[in-house]
Image 1 (tube, rainbow, N blue to C red):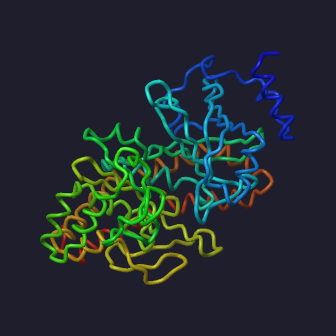
Image 2: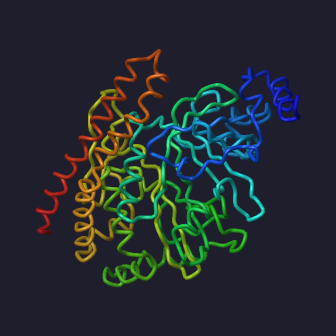
Length: 428
């Protein structure tokens, strides 16, 4: 018996988990046939991700007090005959309203250990596995991120994965590229100062540079060790609250790539991302700052998109919110404020015109890239996995198929709404 098999059996003895022989005989990463990033983030295949967790980690991830604390484990990633072998990682649970303990169906954040070059597996530092418990169609994040990327917005790649924990299947997950320092270096040429994660409903108010790295209106996801302050964020908040519309619009160009920011608002609204920055939840986004105090808004979490109305139990009903409005409803709340930058934009004609033109461009891109067809093809890729996952619950599989069809239909419906709002404002 080699030492790796002996270690797996020791873990099985300690945890009491019935770990299959296939897990006991995994080989280390350096003995594996290498995967590539194209395998990990492929829309045309479902890879296999196996998490091997010791007893202490299992206990921590079933304890609400330690859900979001990184704890040690191992992961094996496979695609056909290609495999990563076993990799030592740290892992925690992900989510707010979607949070679930390990013994349920949780989403995961995986952090790879640094290699000699300061990178992790395949150059990745982190990986996000979303259980899609808030996306009945299972294709919303794939479709939304595909459209963000098609419009030239810095956004995540996605892939599919069958996830298991100590041999117990957790079902189909969407594997989302994490907006971390590795993500940033691939998309920006200047030096990153901070990556901030926005806290829901907080927004860029004066004073939003409050708290430390893991507290306040924005959490510092990267850059705190080198620059342990939020001075860049404080400056931005001051400039974004400029009362004069013309000066504010100039500030927007100085502190953001203005065109890309407005384009981001347009995609968020087109896909119905009410849980994004420009929606009524002012949520699910990152702010990346450079050492020149130039910011980029990076979209995140577009699972409750394409009109899915989870507030009701009716399969196939569609939720819309206005493409142009200061306030909007979301499925569980009414007349809520929308993101400050978006509201200022639609209230200043030059900015509103640019936003409407970007809406027109997004609508056209949805046709050019055949977004509906891509989502339909993605649904076919994952269907056999879902059929197996829900073999004891065929009614749920029927609901998933209905939501997939409704989500694809949403695209053409939204294109019609874009035409209406363009006519309303006289934009051609």
